[in-house]
Length: 219
Image (cartoon, rainbow, N blue to C red; front, side, top):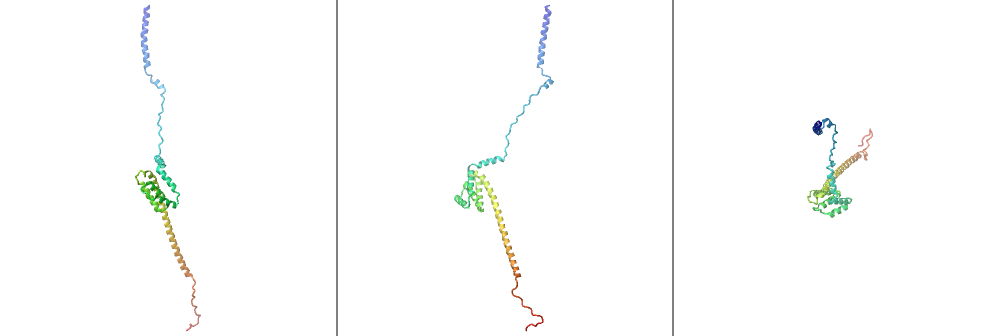
């Protein structure tokens, strides 16, 4: 009676091994498409864009650098000198011009003399000041290079000042010419009035009286 029992046990063991292999194969197979679609999608990580610096206007940076440069070195000294000589009167300006004398080839002294000459209100002095500034602008020496931006600005201002003064002198000359013509016309009008008064003046020598009618003239 033990033989059938042994055969059933062997049959059960033989069936257990394929069943285990089948379970392992099912576990290793991929999930059906429907089950895969049911899974939630992976979270989307937002892309971080780099923050760029705000662009600066191209005309702002050179102006700022030029302003900072003008507050340093010889330009600052020149601006201080211009502020010192600005309130000088005619006599003090002449004394300062005489003290400086011939500027030679020094760009600093040339600009100082140009600042003084531009305040005399004499057209010849303004033209000389403009010539001194042109020498500073054209000077390639290292001493002149820091002063050249200020020299160009002053030269442009002096050119405009010279144009305004020329227009003013032209208007003054036109006014003088108009006044001279008015005076000439007044003289002519006065001469005509004198002639008119001479015609209207009474005759101081009366004409002889006519003889009465019927009388014979004396022999």
